[in-house]
Amino acid sequence: MGRILLLIELKGGNDGLNTVIPYADPKYREFRPGIGVARDHTIQLDEKVGLHNKLEPLMESWKAGDLAIVQGVGYPYPNRSHFRSIEIWDTASASNQTLSEGWIAQAFRGATPPKGVGVDSIVVDTNALPSTGPELRTIVMQDAENFLRQAHALRDTGGMKDGGNPALRHLLAVRQEINAAAKGLADKLRDAAAPKEAYPQEVLLGRQLDLATRIVTARVPVVAIKAALGGFDTHANQVQPHERLLGFLASNLATLRKNLIAANLWNDVVVMTYSEFGRRVRQNASAGTDHGTAAPLFVMGGGVKGGLHGAYPSLGDLTDGDLRHTVDFRSVFATMAQGCWGQQRDFGLRQPQRLSLL
Image (cartoon, rainbow, N blue to C red; front, top):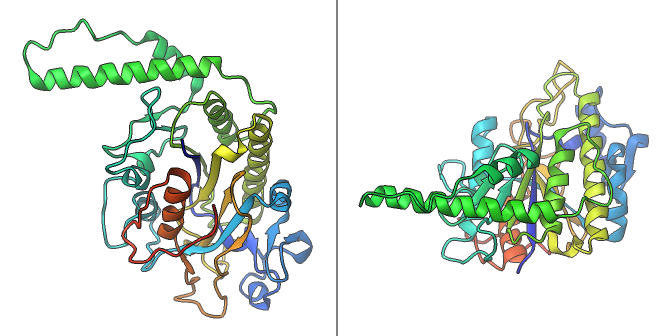
């Protein structure tokens, strides 16, 4: 069996420039005199870039070499609508193309996901698009207790008659399969040990990662789990809300790492953050940032080759005031499909960039 991909969507468009900071570039202060992160609030990673100091809990992973930062991730002809841009990411489409199947489902086209409890992907937030498609059986489960209650209450449809109607027969068969999967998953989750270290509970992400940890430690043979942290649409008075969100993200990811190391499963999971877009380079008149383009993403896991990957976009070479992407997000997805599941996919790119993440 391959690795489980744990996706964490940063909803709203995370400001990459104040996450992975080009502290040595004088243009950074020029574009962001009011909201730029001070040098003494920056954890230097090399002579050019550093992390916001609220991400300090991730430094243990960085020093251990299992945190990778992919810089400048985006796509050509970027779209600045939340709804359209996240759809582009979730379906690995070109910006002028509309697809209905998620990129994880596409990765398994014609392949056989692992057999087990009848579930291939579990979504613990509300957006299931990445794993939506005919190839994957996906369960959306935001609340474990509620799910366990519902699974217990499911009635077996085996005795129901289809009256010779093929459409009804198909529906009953699907329903029976879903019921069986839900019950199988519920049994595994009931037996799962609680994580060694409790997750911070200030945001939903803590509850979601608690559930994700139980799924992994119960050895449910899924290919992907998806969680999310919202609040990144920072148009006004950005500094404090963004700092808080980065703090929540870092403390939860650090706890996840400790729990999976304690369960001896850190090598079996790859964690990846992503967001629909970054923010504009220049701060706006409301001490915030508007919708932009390229941004960094984090990849963590016991088998991850840590460090900086991809080139930081130049602040001296902007397009319409926005960063030019240096890594196409579909190259990241191609790397994940190969490294996690052994699937060769190019997601419509003629030549995906080879990223040595896994």
